[in-house]
Every structure is written in structure tokens, then in C-alpha cells.
Amino acid sequence: MLYLDYAATTKPAEKVVDAMVSAMREFPGNPSSLHAEGRKANKRYNRAKKHIADLLGANRENILFTSSGTEAINFVIKGTHARHPDKTILVSTIEHTATKKAAEYLEDKGTSIRRIGCDKDGYLRIDELEKALRETDVSLLSLIYANNEIGTVQDARKIAAMCHAHDVKLHLDMVQSPLHEKIDLKGLGCDYASFSAHKFFGPRGVGFLYAKTKDDLDPLIHGGKQEDGLRAGTENLPGIVGTEVALAEAAKHVEKREEKIGILAGDLLSALAESSITWRLNGPPLDKPRLKNILNIGLKDLDADDVAFRLDKEGIGISEGSACSSGIIEESHVLRAIGVDDDHIGGSVRISFSHEQTKEDMERLVHALEKIVGNVGKKKP
Amino acid sequence: MKKVALVHADGTVLFEGRPLEMPFKKEAVIEKSIELFDDDDPCIIHKSHVARHFADILEERFKSEKKDVLLLEDHPDIKAFLDIDDNASVTIRKTG
Image 1 (spheres, rainbow over the protein chains, first blue to last red):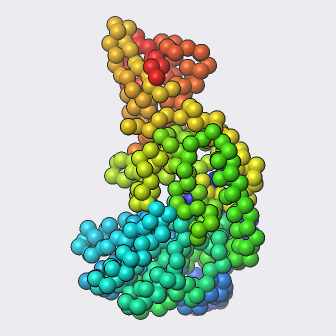
Image 2 (spheres, rainbow over the protein chains, first blue to last red):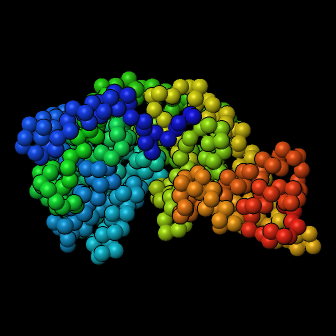
Image 3 (spheres, rainbow over the protein chains, first blue to last red):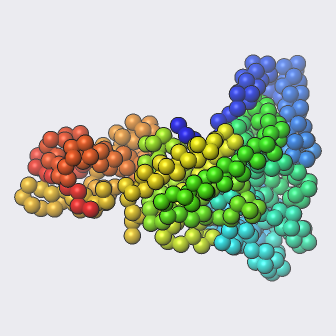
């Protein structure tokens, strides 16, 4: 299969799998145990945590392991709310479902949530943010740094400075970022950042939260004293080791891989431009700050689910971007928030690739799209 | 294939619309959902995906038979997933 759904998940690298299998064999002890097996596991755990922190420009004590990016996001949003129940939490209108639903959950319980809009490319409206920071008693802005649907990358430094001027903490959802930029968390100036290993050729079931300070967080999961008493549960050491290896590989190759991804993105858009397909790029153009491996393509008047189904039959896997909620299929709130018109929103598909693809793969996709577009059902009026 | 109609032998139109919205047997949907996802309680997305598979089977059959009308009695595998009277004589037609 020509897999073009890297924003959904990536296949663990062989090095990662090998490291995890070795860790399962070599470190069977519980890192919390004080006997030799436990100490051996604890040493490995600490080494992995320190290495991960180093790779991100952070310190060991800033990293808190979780089971996923979603858990890390819930942790910071609900953990901050628990400390500041009377304050407002800000989110953008183009958040990942993890943030969107966590905010809606709190809102249903009576918490003040304020949503900051974005422009047509998905960049946060700075004037709206400034107004919200001025008018409201805010504890946290939770913002998707690199958007998982349209690729927009926010100006984190500027936004962090604005937040800090109002004594507000900034959480960045950086789940999509590690494969695409050398991350310097201190340099970005955020207070929290969420990550998920399976997005960068690591294992599923491992995420982590960067916390500049942990004073303002309540735990989400209670039990043992793991993760400095903030996230109970025996450490997933094989997964953590796999995450360490995956992140090190990502950091080592990021520049070269990103250069290739940029070329592939250009190849894909050129092939689309030369095709008979009527389309638009949802999100920013390639010359603006963005992830170049996530291209959201709006196919006029078509049904994205049908397009994805037919591409699957052709051996090409993409994302149709719909989600199930309360028994109905919802259109993308992200595309709606950036003002994608009715003619294109139902036919918008997400193509996400990696350095592993080729120009020929991009051409194959466009040829397949051309072939199926004539057969695809029109979207329901 | 944009639209299809299910027509009874007596001329009654039992359904006309998008193939995805044909009346599918609940049991057939669950059976296919188990085959595709091992999911015996499919959510709307899985149900919708199953419907696409059924619609695709139908579309491919129209193509292979090179016809715009099929008598369902001749295509028991298609009849098996449609929620129509098992004893009725029904045709399915491309109408758009």
C-alpha cells in the first residue's frame, strides 16, 4: 500500500522495535523497586528520560511520561483547571479533538472556556488573543502548535511572550512536530508541551508532557508516586526506551528529511496543478510557516469518504477527516473554522507523507485521483 | 453511479436515491462490520464504511454485467444485504 496517512500514525522504525524488544528482555524489573532488577530498570528509565529531555532542550525533571498525546493534553488542561477552577482557559478554534473535547468537558461542568479564532490559513488571531488576555482572568492558553489537519505552525515565541505578559501559561500541542523541526522547548518559551511517540516512528501507548514547572498541575491519574507523584502507574519502560530511540532518530535526520519533504510537497501540488482535478489547498501555502507533509486538499463538490474509499481500493491510504460524534458523522471543525466553503469542505482529504515517499508516489496519487474523480459520488446536498 | 432505484415487479418504487442510502439489512451490516473490523456494534463511521462496500459491490456488478438493470433474484449476494422482502421480485436500476 502507498501509505499517505503519517499524521494519523507512523510505523515504528526497526531500531525502535529492536530497542523495545531488548528492553523487555533486559529490564523486566519495576523501576520503583529497590532491589537489583528494579534499580537496573530505574537506571534505564532515568537515562531515557534525560536523553529525551536533552533532545528537546529541556531538563530531565521537565518530562512526565503519559500513555499518549491525548493524555498529556488532558493532563495539562484538567490539571491546570483543578488548580485554578475560577479562571478561564483559552483554546483556539482549530484544536485537535483531545483539546477540543477536554475543553468542552470542562465547559459542561461550568468552567469558563474562551475560543480564539484563526485566519483563513489557520494562524491564531493575535488581536483576539490580546483582547481575551486583557478582558479575562486566564490560567492557560492551550494551542495546537502544528496543526494535524492543515499543517499550520503557530508563532509560539510571540504568543508565549503575550501570555507571559499577562501571567498566563502556554501549552503547545506539539504532537505533529518532532519529525519536522529541531525542537528547543526553552527557546520556544512555552510552559507545557505535549508529545506522542507514534507520530515520530515510535511506539503507540507512549506520550509525554513537558512541564517547565510542575507547581501548577494537579494529577489526572492517582495512585503511586511515579512521575514525581503527578502521573501514577508503573512506567512503560520498553515504550519509553522506544520513544527515546525514535526521538533521537528524528532529531538526527530532521534537516535532511525535511528538505526532502519540502520537495515532495512541491511535487504533489505541481502534479495536482497540472491535473484535470478541481481542487484547493486548505491551509497555508508552502512558503508560510507550516508542516509541509500535511496537505489538506479540497476536491470541489466531491465526497471525501468516497474518494478515500476508492483510493483505498487503488492501494492508497489517506485520511478523509470525518469523525464520529454522538452517532453522526461530523465535518471537520478545523476546516469550518478557517472558512473552507461548502463546495469544498465535504470533499476535503488529508494527505500526509514522510521522507520515505518519492516523486513517483505523489504522481501515482494524482493519477489515481484523476481516475476516480469522475466516478465519485457528489456530496449530499 | 450516482443514484439507484429498487423497483418491485408490480412497478412500485421501493427506494430511489444514493446507493449509500439504500435500505441495508441490519444483520448484513453487522456481519460485514465483523468481517471488516471485528466490530459487532458498529458506530456510524463503520456503518457508513460498510455501506460503501455494499454500494461498491453493486457498482462492480453493474459494470461486469454491462447492464443498467439487474434482477435481484439473479444476484442473491446483493439481495442478501438489502432490506427487502425475500419473496419479492425486485429489480435494481441505475437512475443517475
